[in-house]
Length: 505
Image (cartoon, rainbow, N blue to C red; front, side, top):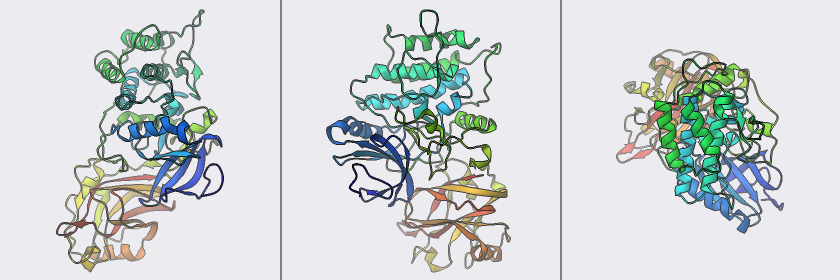
């Protein structure tokens, strides 16, 4: 640790979190850092606040509440520490695009906006149940993750903020989704959007006056949420209302006219399993709308990975910097360097895989009879997977062979960015290999893979159940998730891989 008032690059916090890059925030008050959890070998976001002590108490309280809010739409908070001179919150590092980055270029269709804001309301309701407020809701603090989740950044819980103000911010976010503008009757810093249109008396125009053809019920709900003379529902009640409206009256009529077009898909909301200490499973139910939004953004040649640090510490443009998992995309003010954006050619996207594109690699003296269920690793279902046999005597497959793996054919040479692997138990040693040719589905071919493929990502010993293998960027057609040691089970050593997701350029 340096003697400076706040930590700097290379410092190790709590003997665990190494600061890699300052990616957002001014030098005082709040900073956002990309860090690495050196124990679990995963990227994390570290939000620093200076000073700590009494001034940081609301932040620490909010971090505890967020860590207990096990909803799909709230970022996982891993740790919160107050060291007096400064305090910090450690949370998951999220690849994706900010909602703001999308709304700067297109509005959302009615049903999609309703479902998205309902998902945000779920997170807010969980915070309110925990006794804190978010106090920083706007499109710059809502992420559309690379693995297709709507994610709300960690709360600020500023003194004086109320639950009612959070709900009004949800209404303003709904208005922004529908119109791509922000109603200034709800104060927010750094939204990055134009001010909503007003009438001659300075009142915000109803959404259906801005976008002709919006359902009247939707326009009224949005207007009511922004009306300070009316008492809004709770966040939990609002989530129910939004979903009901999406199902029964929120979808845009086919006769809608003159509205900017959108290419969004349907939405399917799911709940996240696991604990706050785990990295988010990639096999959860997906929000199809997120994938569609990101696809639309890529098509337009704009950002595909966002970083948000919510608040006025950064220029608005900094929140939509495109980066990879280790260089930036997370939550609450800009998890990027603020230099702007990248194009489709440099943004990694998830590779669509089929059962025909994967197989088990089982080199000598393997018996090559363990292929059953390998197709389950690409079904995005954490309850299914591929399982090895049980080995005894030693974790390295009973000392019978150098390892086992899953070969994936990308269809053509691609620059592999990262591979996410979800396993049912921790303790395996896992790495990533790559090559240009498949030497054949045979014992000899599998040995050729072991001998000839290059290392794309070093082996991670004693791996967590959810890991991200970062490639060196080499362009290859074939990759192998390569396992050399198995976790301990009651009668020996065995591993189940639930899901594999590949991201490449």
